[in-house]
Image (cartoon, rainbow, N blue to C red):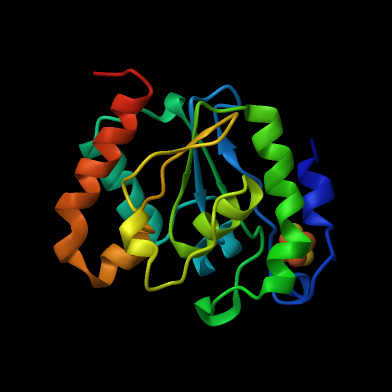
Length: 186
Ligand code: SF4
């Protein structure tokens, strides 16, 4: 596993030039559920704290409504440095950064990996040998369980998308509640 200091000093990709902080995952390192978001937002980058911006607030609202408690979770990002102007990640950045996520998965060994959004799901699918899919097809995968030899994978919408598409909120609460049920919590 890597240290916070190693991550803070990482210069493996050009995103180090525009970040303030590289964000380490947070939560219970023996958690049953690992939530994998895309990248830290502007506020997270400034304050060096996960999920404190608008999409983080949305995530906490979903978790609370679904009765998922913080000790059930380890939360991290696919890319550890913020993406300027919230742009999409480049393949080269995912390639440079994903070994940190790989180490976190190995350390936490959760029962279930829940990638939030298209890019995190695409990476996790590729890592565990599932077929590739397009952005257009991603909604079909949300809320379904995929089983690899070691992990169950449960793709979810990225909470940032709910800031603009509130019509999907209720369905997201159902999906998060199902996530709780998958780990055997009523
Ligand atoms: S995004 Fe990842 S690989 Fe790139 S500098 Fe930040 S921590 Fe390093």
